[in-house]
Image (tube, rainbow, N blue to C red; front, side):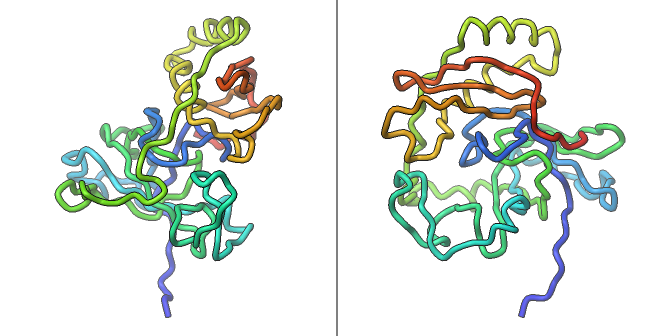
Length: 242
């Protein structure tokens, strides 16, 4: 019987403020975030030597899914949400132990508000995600060039993203704040993944969707098989302290 108690070693800080819109795999969107060590580990000694690696494995907890439980079979988006696979044959977020893993790019060690942090990019993690372990990515053993990817052998197809005149005007105003310097390419990269449920993609879908990035709600719609960003407004999502 496994009895060891697992607790967070860090918290991930990302622009993704809600689950909807987060890339379904790491490395699909080039956006920066931080892995912030918890107070009991807030020392550079815990990460001494880590800058010799270009990438890291993050083991984390799907903390917002735990209360919803899990099932032995799931409907992967790759299969249009119509076919079932066993939970262990997928990367479903609804798992018996709620544990996930992602590989991220490491940019360096920084101190933010007195906290030791790893600056990273390419993560697919919700803001506030508990990190339960950090491990170096080792290319000669971790990269298997002839591996078979099953239903996920190829990267997802992207959908074209455009911005309405209203959205472009709002982006121009927001660009005066350094925080939003790369907001437009981030919105484009996130929405190009078409985060809608799989069953919505095979028919006309007039619904206006909302994705929360940073402290903004991005309103968008799919028109003629392309995403049109309609507007940006202050978020309605409760944000975690950064």
